[in-house]
Image 1 (cartoon, rainbow, N blue to C red):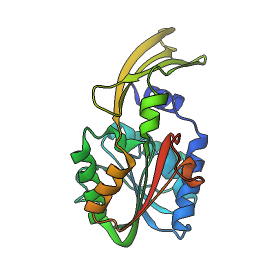
Image 2 (cartoon, rainbow, N blue to C red):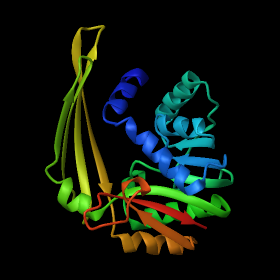
Image 3 (cartoon, rainbow, N blue to C red):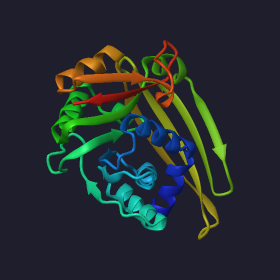
Image 4 (cartoon, one colour):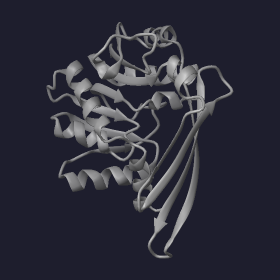
Length: 244
């Protein structure tokens, strides 16, 4: 799949309005003082560019060189400078020091187990300056148990169509998303098919708080609705604001 095609596919399954809502959450917690900020799992750079335009000194980190290439193209098109690091959030030893670290779009849920999640929290703690802030979101257990199983979504345009189906995974509070894309190729005047499976896993709220405490975070606040509401039983996503 070419970079251009991949960008089409990635952007097709993302709601652009979410980037402004994540930006709003960051502003709520950081008061927009131009902090030096590392965005983990930055992907194609849409949120990193949004945060940069809001005044933060942003660096993006992602495991995928393809994603980083797209993020660089996006930054250039937006006319902003966006340093990028190819790296794994499980090892941030070469990333430097930051006043804030963010990890949104449930990227933590792609970690395979609790040990890996704890390792990420410890790595983030190491690179945060004194009184630094860690902001992230995850799927709630309610989302995994009640919303995702059996979920189906289809969408199409002239250039791309995709099918999304979710079903329960093998582990408790886990889910698997089967994604099928049909992307129009002008060169051959046909649609090419691409298939992906995404596996995600979450944990009870108390488990996240316990892991954050073990990683050295002393203040842990949890919200729903991008920081605008308190956590309820039916909250589908939890938003964390943690201070070292």
